[in-house]
Length: 578
Image (cartoon, one colour):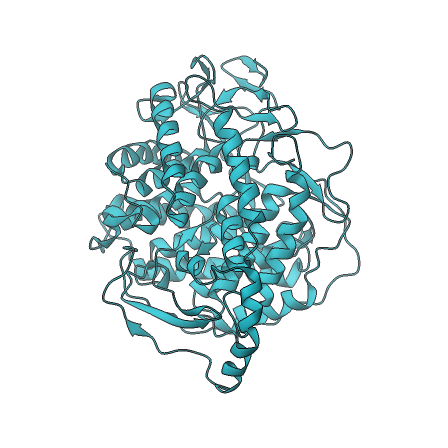
């Protein structure tokens, strides 16, 4: 199927009518409105528990009803949940949280932070909230979206990450100290995803601020990975960013690699970049040739293509959604159904699943409430209307509530075999899992806008169109409006020449917070279907006061289970060395 750059989200088929009913095991159909309310209740049970028991720590510990810092002491759950609040229609809490972040967020701290996680959760979350703030009723300043406090915070966070890219290869270290830069003894080994997952956030930041450095370093890292692929077209799992030599030579689509492929596609759509899409399509050929077996994807040796690990990892469940973005619906549905059978077997996706044995892998039996299969269901349902996808949504809601819900939120499932729980609620549960579930059951959400409505906004460079749809989700499910990248494309110096004029213009329009919405007859893209609507605002208690002391938690340099750990599989021990 030929690739068409004029379709943000890559889903021309999103304009198909949606199937309203999905038969359940007893012949009944899950009612989208019913499950939409159930998902909303899930969100507030988790969110309120975080505010009550864990703020200002990064994440909630639901079994002990307290909090801990995990990725850098940013009140991370608050940032990650911010755009979900708006998607659920709660503009008042969105506004309150924006004020809290403006008053409390500080990146000048002596903390070792994951470059990858800080980018996708903090930079991505702040950028998304910045671009949605006008829709949420926040009073924006003159020059928005090319200026604003949330944008300034996102830029400050991203600048703290730039020292990690100062390597001979241009590929970043996995960890950086926010106050001192890269520590002298920092390991040079970084996972592939930790190198290739920046173009969405950094290109957006460069477009909005006028500073090209962010997009430049992201592109340089992407290109170096591309140049490092094997002769058969595959990339490994971990690489030395100083020498460019592969340390872990396992090739696949899952942990440690996943979002690199995701960002080639989403970067291509966001930036209308044919080269990025061509790179992904070449990878896709190699992945099909060497790793796909009966619509499963295995792990192979990157130079030989021989199978190294016949496992399915839960993180791989994003792949059907990514396939839908390039229009490969048939293959996407077949793979999705494979993954759905695993969900039905356990009531969730175990981290590792042994495909030949049809069972979990030792010490990888847990399910930390990951979103990837639900994410794929959301994309595919928008593309096909297949009722099976609503069934997955129903099953996810029922399973999570039955197994994971506790008094103070939702707990990670430590073992799907006996439903033992772990004392952690990852911030991505509110950023991704709940969000994708809600969007699966909410066909008229503004995120699904088909371009029939939009906002016309005056910027320092003229009129700009926003909110017409076609949102690109980063890998933490933070939606980026692609039209925003065209609002601020001027030299930075030129902006300041018109800044004073813009402030005068806005001062004459006091009290007017919104520009009139109009109907757009045509546009340069075809976003997803559904009229833009908005739920009524809800009221919640304000954020709690900061607690005096915190315990520091060691940080990881990679977002998911690295291959440096031993895997017990088929009675053998696999190492990530070749």
